[in-house]
Image (tube, rainbow, N blue to C red):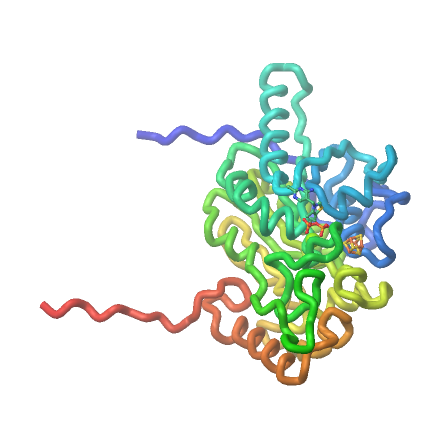
Length: 343
Ligand SMILES: Cc1ncc(C[n+]2csc(CCOP(=O)(O)OP(=O)(O)O)c2C)c(N)n1
Ligand code: SF4
Ligand SMILES: [Mg+2]
């Protein structure tokens, strides 16, 4: 018996930009927003929609990228844009893709491939809205990209710790004190790896960093072209929450990749591929930078002692030396086999 084929709509065929000179000048996220100087998440919005092009609908959950981009009847979005509740980017994205499909099927809209991108912050996506994103990734019949912009805190409400806040960071929920120096002791959640491991219906899951802008845009183009439900996780330096001079945003993104704390990879049609600087590190063509170089540039880690930094480095080394898929899957390599029962 043949299984019913999943009915999907065609996607836009967006070829990779072959170098920065091939990137179009048109902007679909323009000036007039009110994000902080040096806000990398604003750059992510700009590059994301530049990569997607004009026939795109963007949805976004509450957070800096909602509040600062749509203030008092003004907006920097040139494409259609809609706000959705904190925690709802998955549902809003899936609902929009389903609605477009139904309208086209009923002849109420011209049939054409329209990109649907739903973005969320780490609070809205990696914590509160994880279940809705997971549900979306189980529906292969809808074309929707979820982009999680990760500034490692609930930034818009004044930098509360999220599941994505790194070990030891000073947030308004974890201020270092005289009695207890490290208030935030959890290692960052591994969202892209978790989603890739658990969602066989998704044909694209990847990580990006806007310091590598063309590579980042090409991941967005790839996800939209492959279609179905897809997911991209972006690490975004945030001058306010990470407490550094805004001119360092680009450098901090590079440092996060080069010290191995933020591995760049694609899981495309279930095949894992490291790319860019991460590939060079894994192939030992480049050396991992000490995480100290990344930490000392940020006020949120100013209270860390040399021992704390050693601990941080040891945890990163563990990601690369002990994980089954280095930097991707936090299951340790040494396979334990239960002793068979004595017969
Ligand atoms: C259900 C709900 N709880 C709390 C809030 C208050 N709130 C608005 S934005 C925000 C922070 C969201 O953090 P994140 O998703 O990481 O986005 P960021 O602000 O960092 O860009 C919070 C807690 C809300 N809007 N809705
Ligand atoms: S707090 Fe951070 S994420 Fe929010 S607008 Fe400022 S720099 Fe951007
Ligand atoms: Mg956030």
